[in-house]
Length: 222
Image (cartoon, rainbow, N blue to C red; front, side):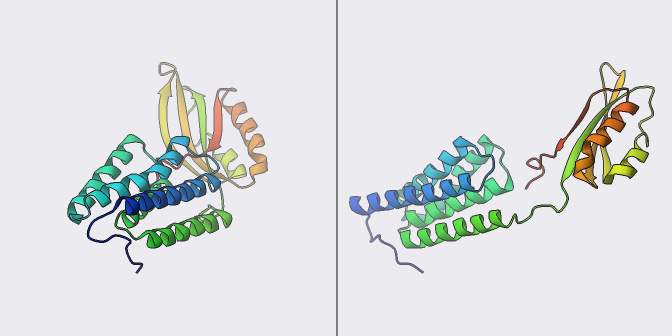
């Protein structure tokens, strides 16, 4: 375990070192988040930069009462989570900032630096190898059909031709009940044949609206 830079009382010089290191580690973590994300939030990147310094300041101010420190950090995380619903990946970055802020606030700046380096290296490696990427991309297919067309198995022969797996997840009425909207989760046998599948579906549903795109897993993430 790294030794703390703090003695019984925190001097101004020690506090400035702690804050500077916390900001630097937050900057490294924030840069890692942006470099390993195809799409990212500017506000979240700024939060990753600032949160370690804020947490370290709070911990340093009440370092004599560590139970109070942890309760305060818990309140910070609850505020952050309630302000924006993020993904599991965002959660891992938030927990990393909390850990780094705790380490710096208690004076373990070397330990906080090691944690930051490990987290960043792991994130870069996982991003490089596409860890957790599904072998087959699941898509969401939404089809509008007229009310006189029975939706039970209406596209089964088309799905047998183009789709590896299919699941009807929702049926709802639309256009004042004169039409049905069918929502499927599908995995295509050959992604290059997506247009051919849509052409056959729109021939059968009377050329009504069809939407096919990537699924959004953020709401399903823990």
